Image: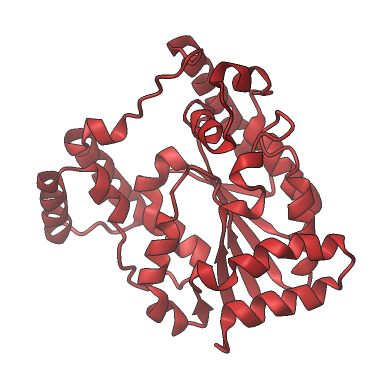
Length: 291
């Protein structure tokens, strides 16, 4: 069985990737790919790690997860989507470090699906936008006190991915920057679902339509109909051109008005994020999808 995990991260696509895959679930099922609704399996999935901690047989845990998630459907591949794979939102910076305990759940799931073909897919994002949202969900009273406890490194995401890689040695790991998601949306759906390359994907412009004006979308779709792109690279160049002209600035811009989170901090974290992405790009056994 091919088991494909989409593990967030938190505050990236807000389950939009899952919703797009669910739009295509019937077409995917024809190819033996099951996209179960998350309410069906998340409880048993989230309890799986604790069952392993109690000494239960990993393969018994696996069978319980798949029995519930598949619900009697035959499949060669199943896609499971949960941002809680690495942590609940309140514990993202539990030790001050980004997903500091990432190796613990990753190791548990690697053991559970040891006899399957496991793939792990994760979007990452700039900590300048990530940290304020983590603070909100951490239910802490004071933002300045909260950030003083954080260990924000220049390689924070690389450290997370390295921890996953160290314990899930046979898993295929794919990473992308959430900031690039509108340009690589269709490819992400194909990569995570494992659908055949010639399958038509419904909702391939779902995310673009949220950040581009209606006039821009109309013009872009008309252009693509008249001059269909021959490959993914051409399609992205067209997307970039129309987004540069018709993207809605108020949707693209995030307000970060918090004490201690000034322009200098945001700029430093942004530069660190760019360096972090470069480090990830050079990890030989991790795939980085980029426009």
